[in-house]
Length: 59
Image (tube, rainbow, N blue to C red):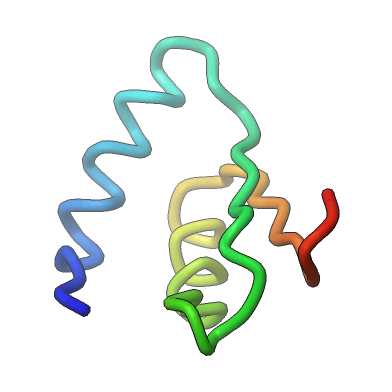
């Protein structure tokens, strides 16, 4: 799976934050289908965004 560079993701997240966004939910579910928990953590730390990551098939 191709991934965007983290700087591009942070740029887009900062636009979301500037519009009042504070939290997003990652419903990916697990690493086996594409979640990158370390990248989510890095984005959260660099932007101050709350990222809620589900841990299974139910939200």
